[in-house]
Amino acid sequence: MKATLYDITGKKKGEIEMPKLFDNRVREDLVGKYFEVDKFIQPYSPDPRGGRKHSASGTISHKRHDWKGHYGKGISRTPRKTMWRRGTQFFWVGAEVSSTRGGRRAHGPKGIGKEKKINLREIQIAMNSGFAASANKNYILSRYDSLKDLSVQFPIVIESKLEKVKTKEIKKMLNLLFGEMENLVFKNKKVRAGKGKIRGRKYKSNAGLLLVTGNDEDVKVNGIDVKKLGEVKISDLYPLGRLVIYTEKSLSQMEAIK
Image (cartoon, rainbow, N blue to C red; front, top):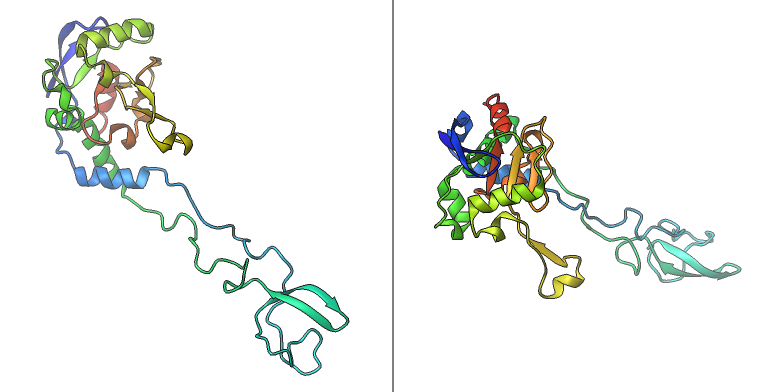
């Protein structure tokens, strides 16, 4: 597969041969599997000491003449805590067990649960599929329906001279490539409508463009995601077909990926 190479001003410079992984078949099943394994899940479970933060005696005996026993009281052996006593007379309330008020929870969640696993080979295939989908017109149009009239060809490759280029010039270059598609290329942060504002989800933002650079390149641009090749995760490419621009160095380092 060949791609058009652009200079830092957004003008066509020539053609470049893409790494072989861009010709691989996109395995949507493995991409979805790896995304489920890789995404962060908030652990949740009750306090392990919940319902046990008191001094409650164990199962109380029904022996005759036993200290603090239940003999002759007509009550069960439920663990109890002492609220007050007068000589050998006690006033108890049930505690500790799940059938009592304020007791422990019977079968609460035990934490994050069983951790999902995936093979290293499946991870490699999933990442290669994510990169390959970023160069596949069908996947891109299925994610961005408004790009049907765009004349630019994917994948897009930029020469590796962005380290000393200012953000203003890079944005000018992106506007030249994508035209009036600023709402897709750049991140747009806005206040969410509805009750989500009071539930910790006040703002909504689109994904925007992803710029993949070489591991030894240091590029900083406001308004888009910039990731070194070794830092790219499956969540950066999922759902498949994200707008991605690659630098020459990132492609040369991809050649080592099989």
